[in-house]
Amino acid sequence: MSDKQLLSFETERRVAFYELDPMQIVWHGNYFNYYEDCRRGLLARRGIDLNEYYNKTQCLFPIIRTSSKHIFPLRYGDEFICKATLVEAKTKLVFDFEIRLKKDGKKCTRGRTEQVAVKAPGMEMLFSIPEEIRTALEF
Image 1 (tube, helix red, strand yellow):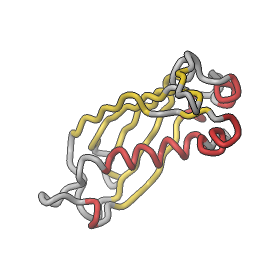
Image 2 (image 1 turned 180 degrees about the vertical axis):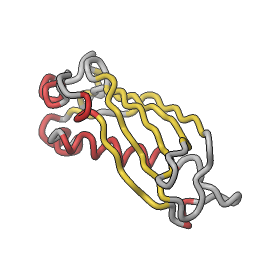
Image 3 (image 1 turned 90 degrees about the horizontal axis):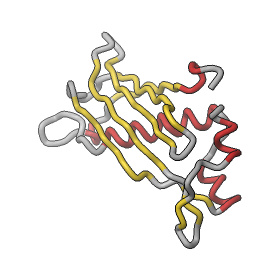
């Protein structure tokens, strides 16, 4: 990895009404949608579209592990920043996430996802990320 700055990516959003739970805070499952949008942006910055890669190679990247620590709730109308940082891309893709309020930087959530490479149609797990992906991510 020669340029760590390129291995992070941020998105900005505003909480919509339909993302809330009955307590009027963002429903916990929506944080994984925020992570996905940011992860996809990081990969796109490096010229990677995992759906296109699957269509070309029949290689999938299922998520095998997720975690999220909720620190401060997001509420209707909050503007926030989601940051994805790639921390591993040799044997699996590991992304760390942080969500913070745009107005004051208050940390709301930290998370992590892990993905492995799997060859379809037999769903055979590969034990390394394909070279083309590793090269694009500088791993």
